[in-house]
Image 1 (tube, rainbow, N blue to C red):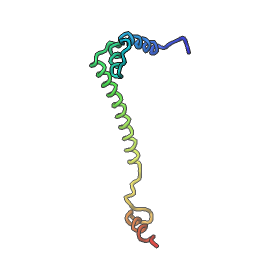
Image 2 (cartoon, one colour; image 1 turned 120 degrees about the horizontal axis):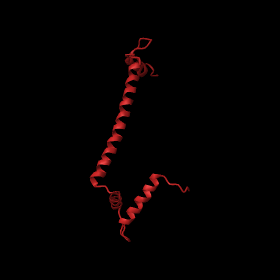
Image 3 (cartoon, one colour; image 1 turned 30 degrees about the horizontal axis):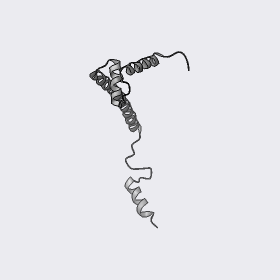
Image 4 (spheres, one colour; image 1 turned 180 degrees about the horizontal axis):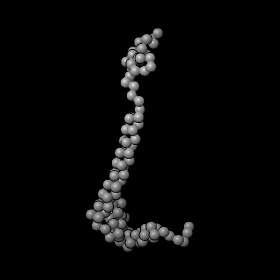
Length: 108
């Protein structure tokens, strides 16, 4: 372990100390109660926390949507570049003829 701590580590330790100051000795806290203590230690209101959560959710959704649109463009280009055969091949057989031949002529 190093003696040097990053800003994030120091902030986390300070937050834990602030939470411990708010706790009552001997009381068992639920997860929701611990989250409420954390929020109070940070000095935030419920509305602020909700706004932060919504902003983060919208940011993730925007990134996900951009990736989806990009994937859609790539697939569209692939389809456009693909040669269209319309069911005939070099022998002049359509897809129906091929299925018919495979189904009925290959019976033994």
